[in-house]
Amino acid sequence: MTRRKHQFFLHNSVSTNVIESGKPIYKTIKGNWRREYFTNDNPIVLELACGKGEYTIGLGGAFPDRNFIGVDIKGDRIARGSKIAQMRNLQNVAFLRTDINYLNEFFQEGEINEIWITFPDPQPRPKQEKHRLTHPRFLSIYRSLLIPGGTLHLKTDNPELFAYSLEQVQQAGCNDLQSTTDLYHSELNDIHLGIKTKYEQLFFDKGFTINYLQCRI
Image (tube, rainbow, N blue to C red):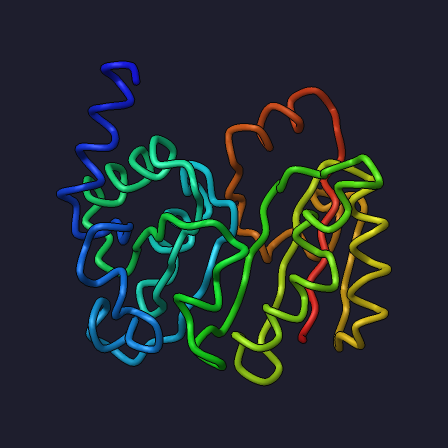
């Protein structure tokens, strides 16, 4: 492990806004996010595969009356987001370090109000389909964790993943589906509040269009 990564992992181990293995709250947080961590009854929003948490932080600053949790397995990425959230004194932002396959171990049915999936790995090969975050298996998990009628958002630069995702949410019977293949020139543009991840900015600067969908599941 490099010295820089060691510093990131040390940061996570002592930071209260990072929930990870080895901390007592890691085993007791399921169903208790509002009571044990946020100490309020505000809605909870997840950003899955959050990376450095650009959306978690951006939305947390824009909506102080909501709670935001960035979920990722990469500790060094989470540490970067954690530090920014601390510098901005965002008490409504937390980070959970875990594999997304295990969401059911950390959230109770109906505990979540909204989910954002921002620029996930498209997993393009056919044998990788089950790892796509809009695969039916994941959509089923999201449906169980979201409140009835909870909202799912997806942003991606990958047209193949977007087409696949549209098909999956339609087959899953999601309601109030809205989508666009060119978010920044769409009437849906205001929904994302101008928040861009590092890679999204790179894509945008190169002239790529951004695909977006939202629906209730």
